[in-house]
Amino acid sequence: MTPEQRSESARKAVNARWAKKKTKSVCNNFPQKIAFFLFPFAQYSLDHRLMQRMNRWRAPRWVRIWTITVTRLGDGWIWYALGFLLLGFGGPQRFAAVSAAGAAAVFGVFVFKALKHLSQRPRPCQIEPHCWSKVLPPDQFSFPSGHTMTAFSIALVISYFYPSLEGVLLFLALNIAVSRIVLGMHFLSDVLAGMVLGVALGCASITAFASMGLA
Image (cartoon, rainbow, N blue to C red; front, side):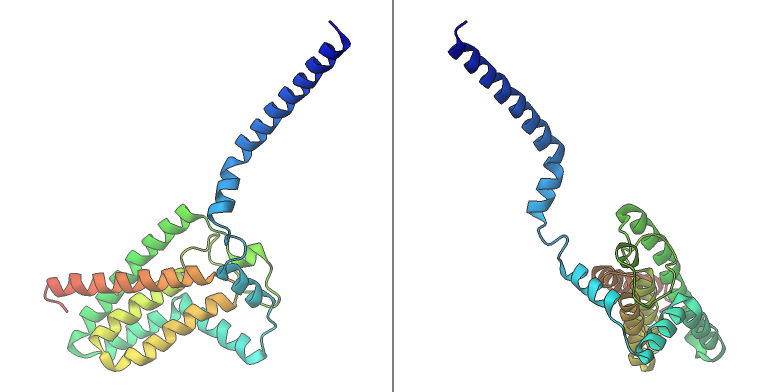
């Protein structure tokens, strides 16, 4: 074999090894590359930009007190208190109202737990530590917001039975939803999904009770 032939053979061997290595690299990284090109907003979306702003925002004292108080009420205390008040002073429709709201809330727990398990989306505070909030998340995953789902499902159902409470309940539900974002518990999309699912659950509960002649 002449020197030129040996050189050509060596060059082909090097090219073959390089091509094999490149193919292996491309195959291993193909899913990530597809995700990168299909979802270029994944790391710099509105969700993440807002999360970074909230987690780095040194909110004034009144905002801190307001958000922590509202989110604690959304843990369930405000809804338990509302249920007892309606049972005591809610008039003839009190049992239907509390039952329909309770059904929506309980079914919602199963829904958001299942969705959280499926999505396994980490919470904002797990991705970037919050600069002042020490509120601990009730579970590991973020999507969707259970607090928001419960708030809107109950607010919708109770407003159906007691229209005069609609403004107060909607204001409370919105405040709970916003507090979850400010405290680094949820992304914006978690909260928006919670709103939609909460309204859907509320409507389903009202429809079910109406079909039984109870609403």
